[in-house]
Each structure stands twice: as structure tokens, then as C-alpha cells.
Image 1: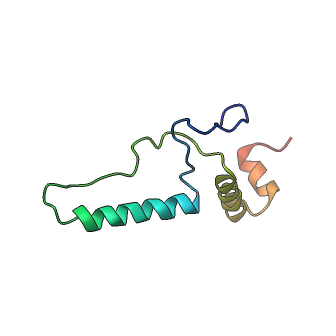
Image 2 (image 1 turned 90 degrees about the vertical axis):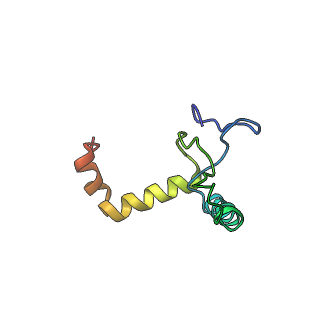
Length: 87
């Protein structure tokens, strides 16, 4: 997402790596690959994607971040003090 606009279909890296469904499906792919190739001495590893460089600003990530902030700081006052965001 750039300037508040979501990428249109067809652009690269259209995934939200924090989304529970993406993580479930990625785990299933890894499990199937492990079953098929895990005992092959010539296979030392694999990866689902090699470009986890994009930040995620999806609704799932936003909710996870807000929940983390709430658990860590409890209140906005407690967050604003160390973040110096009390104006």
C-alpha cells in the first residue's frame, strides 16, 4: 500500500504475511513439501517466498499491532509517555 491505496491485482507480492489464512496455507505447503522431499539427502531446505521485504498494513496486521500495544501499555497515557506522543 502506498499513499493509502491498495495495490491492484497482478502486482507482485500481494500477500499479507501476518494474515492467519496465508500462514495456514503456507504451513500446509511446507508440510506437503516436507512429506515429499524431507527424506531426500539432496534437499537441505526450502522457502515459501524469498521476498518478505514488504511491510504489511492490512486489517489483520493493524489489529495485531493494536492488540500488542494494548497488552504492552494498557492505556494511551502509558503509550504516549515513552513514545513522546502526548500533545
